[in-house]
Image (cartoon, rainbow, N blue to C red; front, side, top):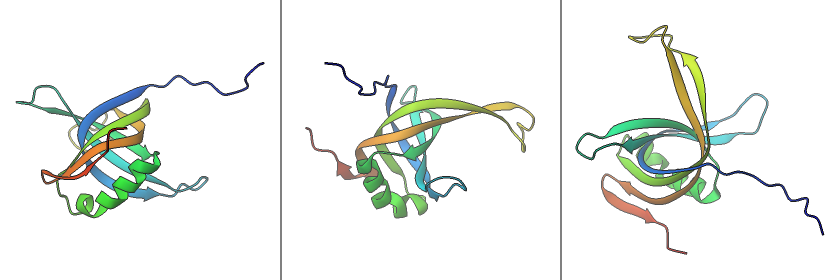
Length: 131
């Protein structure tokens, strides 16, 4: 018996970060999708650094949670989440304005699959039940 089931290699990224720039994106030649930026925390808790990910919100649970948090995000409240990303890719670009004009940069893009928990201004608003 043979299987024609598609097989994939999964590259998963987990972390904790702040949500911003929630938006509905309607491409000219595709279906609309929900987008969000995550400023992921890394490094020492005494001097945390940020890595930014531009994400397509893909998982249904993640879509539901992001939509619930949308007003807090647009009000610039501190929305902190534990997340799972997949399909991380980098796209190079050249800065057009500011101090870095003319310098190369990179956009990190991924799919937001899951949110394990969420806090708004330090108060827990969502916690995924253990399976």
